[in-house]
Length: 305
Image (tube, rainbow, N blue to C red; front, side):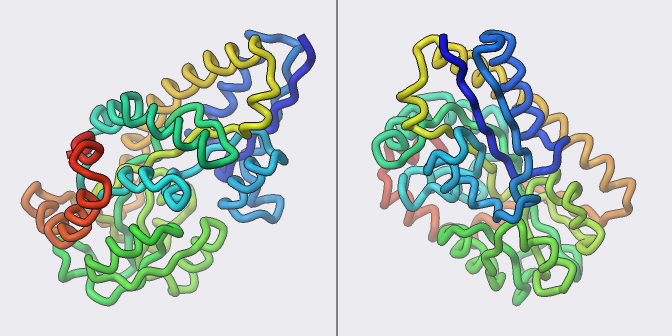
């Protein structure tokens, strides 16, 4: 078997859940294939002058072989990914995993292969996303009115936060912290791990545990590379990717608990919404849920609601 060189790219600090899982994937490949594989992880391409979103084009062009990235950025090319961004729908990890690992996940893998230069190898847990801001506790939608919020580059996300009363500003992760520090970004939304590890809590002392989105990250590889890999390597990659995915999800859930303890220790003002309070936010974005059901049909929509 010829030696296969895998270049894997990420955009997070070394100890992040995603990079730990990527390292495990490399370790498992090496354990299975020995000297027949060389695994190289660049855990944060931002340090090399790239934007985080450049991971996608670097992987599709073949400069990288593999990466992880938010599925929100793939929705323009595979519209069904937008269903992962339905607001206030998923509130339990088990529900999310069942959707990812079931028929809907298989459908997405087929569409990715048909419509892009990627091969989808799995779905990673990108965490529940929550709202933080620099001004005040947010408990009801009226507390939001007029604040600027950093969003992903997603039309659906912009529409969601616009309906909630925010002024959405799309920024790459590379520009997020400077926007928070300068005050341009009055509010932002992220998983707890990013809120803490990016240092956002130092500037946004208020966080509301809205769980408005459950974030999904796609584990991707370059499709042309995949086609050229030997069957033996593909089999080993499938095993390693599956094991890394199980561990990544375990780490993600554990990380949420650990980070919550840390931000409590930092005296962050944490708002935990009651069921009826969260429903009030969901009611504000009801037009989007109706619109997406019409767009995709009840069959696909039923996986989520």
